[in-house]
Image (cartoon, rainbow, N blue to C red):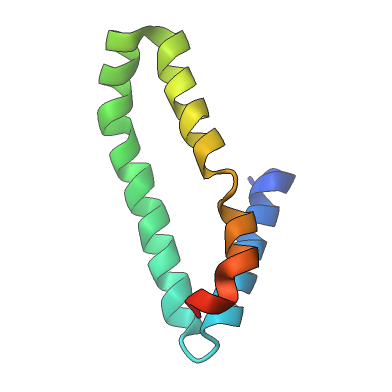
Length: 85
């Protein structure tokens, strides 16, 4: 079951894929799903060791730092996306 932010993220990514490549929309959705499922399959392989070696506070902080670094990407794509297309 999706929460509201997860559903909003999913719908906005589908809209972006449709806007970027309307002729290859189904292929882009399939590639998006494959990437999402691959990340979901690989993620448990390294998180257990990471939480055991770093402890819960630092291991969670690493994910928070990565999330903070990735936060400006939507704004950058909005501002410079027309040049990428």
